[in-house]
Length: 326
Ligand code: UDP
Ligand code: MG
Image 1: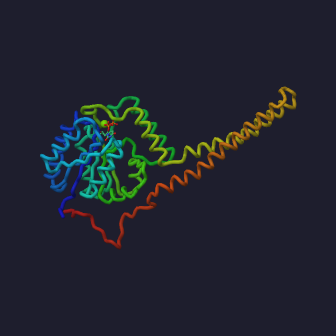
Image 2 (image 1 turned 90 degrees about the horizontal axis):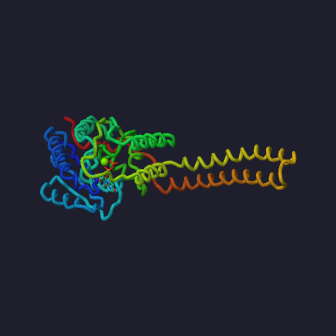
Image 3 (image 1 turned 30 degrees about the vertical axis):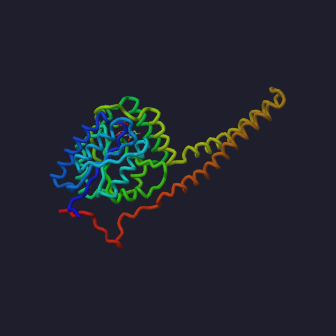
């Protein structure tokens, strides 16, 4: 085994022909310089995942792979979406590497941070999050909606690293633990902090997309946010229960008011009984829906079959890291 950690850089690509040549060139240079600095093993690789592109993305990957042994590629049969493409890449990479860095194909993330990632890895960190220093290159809308998203997630008890997308390093053991999460809707940004291994952040400036256009239109962004919330939290269901309870309490006051009006003879006959039953039943029904939601929430958690804990060190096994610090 090599003395140095073998790195795989995983790059999900969807219709990226406009930028892919440049991305490959720049990432190869990074790899080369890291090898020379003895931060990674000589047989480290770049792994491009073609997420069912309809342009020349796969041809570019294939021909680069034929020319350069350190360029690898996998092609998904259809467009499975960014998160799934990334997961496919991570799964394949976990079999061949000591650590993995994921990065988007569009060079928005500063590739110079990759060196900092590796230095943190050598210091013993298992997870290194790339965090954007500023979001100036994003539109006002994207910035504000992102802020709102982190706020909402925080309120629902979901720990996310703010301003961190999918630019990160993970050690082999982190990957192996991550891959034990078998749920169909894997929300990586929420799961990885849950693993609890030693982690740190590296700050960088996020730039404009190098070429091509964003593959995350508003519709996909909203779907992603909703996926994130519903695959982690049953808070929305609790909200319904609370609403039902409030309505139920209010129905007592409405009932009192209706009774007074009725006795004072201000109403047509039947009004009070109608109003009271609407409020009382409305409240009871909402509470009942919420209660059923609680049980569905439990089922939802069970079917995910998430691991309940992650062992970081096991002295029985006396594990050592796969490379030796010199
Ligand atoms: N991507 C993908 N499958 C998709 C959509 C996007 O693999 O269905 C890739 C895309 O090629 C890029 C990364 O995911 O490498 C992030 O997408 P993009 O840059 O368009 O998102 P943005 O930075 O605008 O949020
Ligand atoms: Mg981008």
